[in-house]
Image 1: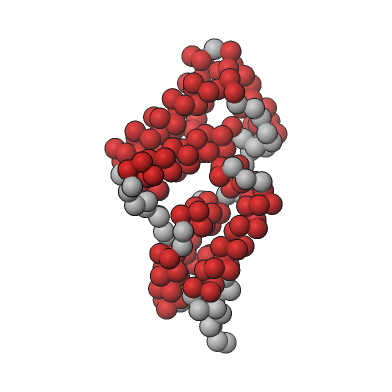
Image 2: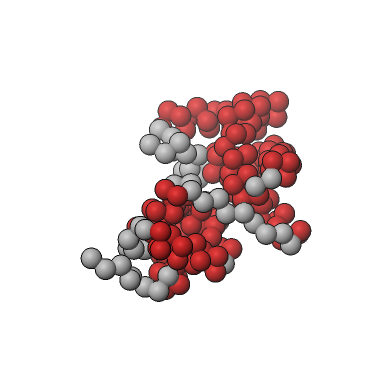
Length: 190
């Protein structure tokens, strides 16, 4: 089970904690303690800079605390709301500072992505995948990161970037088609 998925009891407990924080901001600390590390890692994967990550993560929790009364449960964990705030804060930072965003790649994740575009996972394909990813736009890279590198559900992906689950699926499959074309189509021979 993905660490971002919760069972019904966990969701109920989380909702109780959110309600407590809505009525008394001092009770937000439980949510902060629970999610600080995962939000920090989420931001760090996109910045590659610990100090910047700490600043953005602090901003995420400050905005969450200020806006906790506006939070509405929409069938996904509270963390999805925090990740969406983090996603927006990261994008705002890079737009404002005209800086390059980091894409954190791990071999196993690249292999899964190669398999998804129906290519054979070998060093040649890995090089072609890396070249294709460098040509992708920001929105496409974000979809790839969320779905393949962070292994999030389509519902989570949609919630984080502010689109429906079905729209997340459609956009991801279009992105995968772009990658396939950039890699030269299916060239693996058996």
